[in-house]
Length: 186
Picture: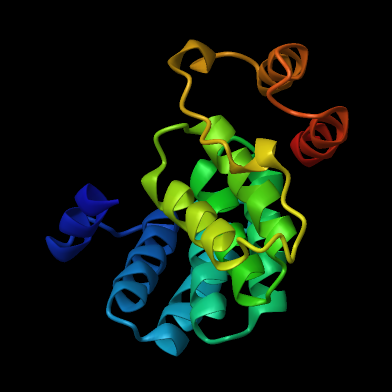
């Protein structure tokens, strides 16, 4: 994305595809600056030109989340995940929106998916731990398995369903967690 921003700033964009990138980059810049309404406006323009851009949908969700429009944000993150189910950032940002809504168990499940895709995703690890710490009295009935950090490098490059089967066989997750995560993957 940073390379695209440099290209945009140097005037490399000229056709309709480039116009979409221009809007997407401007939206991202506004998002980074905390100008969420302006970001949303630019991102929506990019999505008109390319409604199948998972990153633009994720950025839209982030802007909506920052504006406190959590349900709309979740719908945007769902679209992100629909377009690119292996995009760990989409799962992570959805986890934030669920957290902001107080849907802690759902947030942990979504963050588990982000960590399954990218075991080194520090932001997902931190948010998951924050949720667990804030709810340490088992108010939300977190199981011990959901508290585990998924950092096993043996899983890199494997099919997510196969990883879940392996973790189930090892007793790292319960059958219920297996079924829940498998449902999220589909």
